[in-house]
Amino acid sequence: MILPKGNFIGIYRGKPSDFFDKVKNGYLRISWKDSEDIYLASLVVKEGKPTMADLEFVKSKKVLKGKDAFDKLLNVEYAVIEVYSVESRDMQYVFSANDETLLIESPKTREHVKTESKEKSEVEESVETDNFEEFVLNIEDNFTGVVKGVGKDRVATVYIKDGELVGAEVSFDNEKFEGVSALYYLEFPAKVIIKELDDVKVSERIKVELTISREDIIRRYGIKLPDEKELEEVLKSLYELSFEEKEGILSKFSKLLFRIKKKSG
Image (cartoon, rainbow, N blue to C red):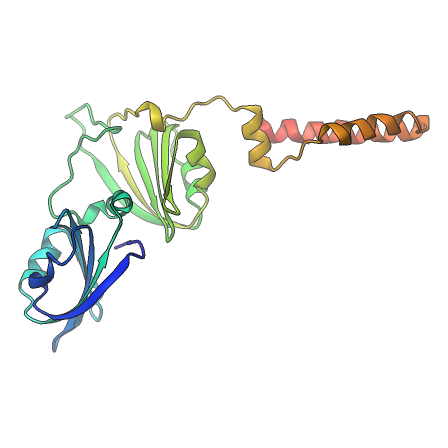
């Protein structure tokens, strides 16, 4: 489970279920062992109630998530429990990064993603990639659905309709980036969760407009524009150059302009 650093409250020993109410918003790290395996569990608590759980079997390399993990925790009599609190504003990040560990199934319909047709079932799969941005750019032309990238320091979700990127949002460094601004934070190694849908609809706040502004191009490619003083010096120096020197400068400007147009195109 991907969790923020949190504020350490304390370490306890005993029955895990006796400590579920130790924190209002936060999580518990729970560990124990028996003759068969070593177990590491995480339990997220929101508003004083357990809401997410996962459990790793270290030796057998098995993982339980959601209700299966929680049911196992309820039967544990003795474990080491570390308790951490999390700021309310960070709880949304926890849910975005770990929705597959919810104790109850998350609703199919959300604020900005809605499945309209009941004839086609949802298809979900997960893969690993070194570059989430490149993965999204190479997705099938006819794909419609949601692609989520979960990395060490961020979670990105993009919404695609008929192969066209229509929405994006990224949670990174305790900040949330939406729409076009999210596109600058898609380049990272990630576990990719792909959910194919019949249709997607996005809200205005995460919508990605297809128009690219001059400012977007300058920022994307790190182009440095001269200030007024620098431009004045360049123009002044032109009057002091020979014909051959002027021709050389104009040629360089032409090549630079071509490269900028090529990149922006």
